[in-house]
Amino acid sequence: MEEAPRKRRLLDGVRERREKHLERSRIVRVVVAIFGFLVVLAGLAMLVLPGPGLLVIAIGLAILALEFVWAERLLERTVDKMEEAADTVKRSSRKQRALGAALLALAAGGLVAAAVLWDLPLLPV
Image (cartoon, rainbow, N blue to C red; front, side):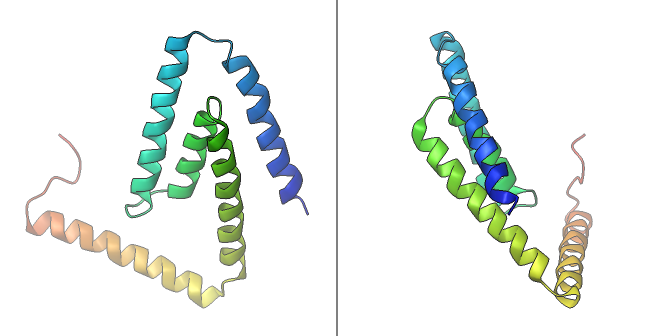
């Protein structure tokens, strides 16, 4: 299995970076922690909004793991969930993938139609 060594390398890399990070000034460490929390919040929002929610959460947890051991444990569980999701997608049938793509296209079309009907800007101006 290639996933276990890859996950282990990721977590070992986080631990190595943590050692260097803890030598930084308190101000830098606080800024990094705040940024990590913001990235995790963005990932949580992406769980219900379009976007790669689990991936962004994992990135935010990796940033927070530089400062907090609890974030490293959550990162490990998040990576496990991401691997489970990837396995589920790999096991899905062609019909299921096509249905998923059709639903995404339908949702995107609905957003565009709503923007046109209610005169909402599609892009910030």
